[in-house]
Image (cartoon, rainbow, N blue to C red; front, side):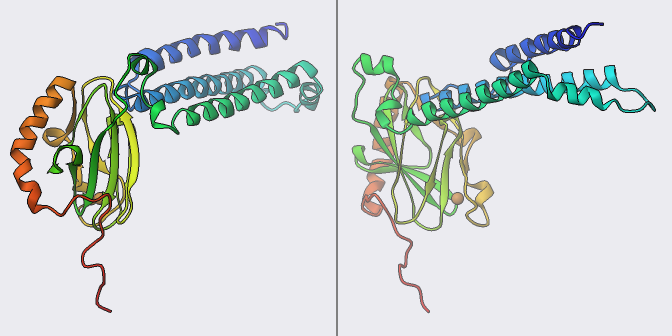
Length: 281
Ligand SMILES: [Cu+2]
């Protein structure tokens, strides 16, 4: 067998396995968190890209390793160190190794910079097509309040009513103002692709733009006490992103139902402090 064949045979195996893996990642595997928001879609695509690269590189390492181990192992014979030194002085082999490592590392760095850049401004969360169509720039504001052990949601633009379930519209920028009235919690809205810490006395702001109606599973992402594990809005209690018309009918319902209670709530503020503020020594 010529030397070249020892590269071609495992190379073909790697190529076939890689195509199967890449198609699975792109078409079959449901890589989280999905495509409900632009942020979530970004994360999903990033995970797909890196699953493809990592899978292909991993496949190559395993296949070439196994192939050479089987092909060149000589049980009981004297090790031929000449093979190793020939590989070391093989310029094309070394160049290919260093070159491919360089390309992979530079790609990861470049991709990371571009993706991070895309998440630093709320206007970049809105899809370009919606911006071109003149999407509303005034965001719907939802205040997320964490407390032991549940999240509540306040809608300050609509009289400050408060609900136990999250409802937001599609096709509009949503601004979350996240705070806590006791200990540190974290508002993790899985399908939205966001996780925002809820700290007492501070207002943590994040944006999402939902592109299609979806259920929203919310969990507390920060160990916050005995019932932390139950601090969820999932199943029947899951939040929802509704179409604009469904959302506005929900708004009228919610304003009528929860609005009268709003006067019994603490006045709306961006931040809250645990009560009492001063503890006995
Ligand atoms: Cu919590």
